[in-house]
Image 1 (cartoon, rainbow, N blue to C red):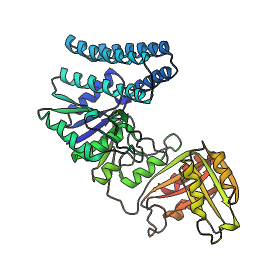
Image 2 (cartoon, rainbow, N blue to C red):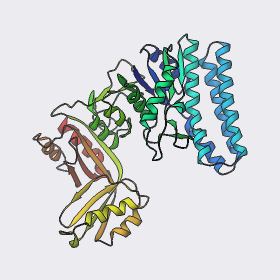
Image 3 (tube, helix red, strand yellow):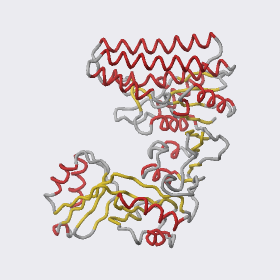
Image 4 (tube, helix red, strand yellow):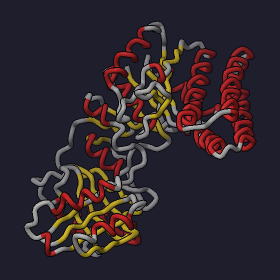
Length: 436
């Protein structure tokens, strides 16, 4: 059994739903994970904004517009009167339910219930369409098995036990359809998975059932070895180690959130990125196998801020770094890169909401300087320190570009450079020319 996940744009219209239905019916008896139709979640979030502001009319107007869109989708998607009626009745019941929220106290609990409706609608519409085509498609309600604990982390034992139970309740199914993103929390309230959304759902489901493979279908042909908008002649990367994929996900590649494939990695289940617009393309395979001595890709992360603290008191001072890190921790700000010397430490962050407070607190320990509008350029591949030559080739490519920081050795899979944002394109082209 495989797990196939399709994002919002892949099911963004009646024609796209039909196309996805054709793909999944040819793929065997699998679990299909769907996001909400593109644009739906944004509209639902807009509705919650009106409700927080007690603007019932604004909420009702947005609900009416969204319902009209779905009426068009239904008219185009289904052929039989019975299917159109069943889909219309269900979708209208959802929007009637949304209108009841204009008459009550509105909190985060109600907000998450509203935002979850997009996935509930898309999966019901897909299941009905497949059934109209004669496919035995069974809905697996994610709210019956997907759960997070008090810390907001997936309750993997609960997920495995309850998912197996709902699968066993429908052994005759040709296909199973379920929702991505949504879940229940430790209080049994409707909630969501936050990081990675539907990709995270697919990874957790795949790990829970011991899937043969997890497929993430998007409108992009896998991960590329560089940004095609900047560097000409880029190529899709056909194979990545899980750690390489995580590095690319964190440092700019937008296909995968870096944490969403962790359950697949730990369960040793391969993940394949595929293109809904070109289903025959091989895509990108991600697994626990490494290709020795190979550079895979270059990625960039914009809007980075560099912070340097210099202090003669740092010399041989026990606890100095701990005190510095505690300042960032107190403001819940993660550090991307870090370099140290005997008298100073440089760090980069991408969250500047508490920058002024952090700088203020750091000044207790030394002289602080800040560089804004920086960019991290990350070279990803088999970068084990015993592989001679890769770091020198990367450094040589950057010889004409001012480099603020270099990070090498923290991971076996990347070497990172911090440069000015204005030098990003030049750096990407230089590295691409040198490495590929």
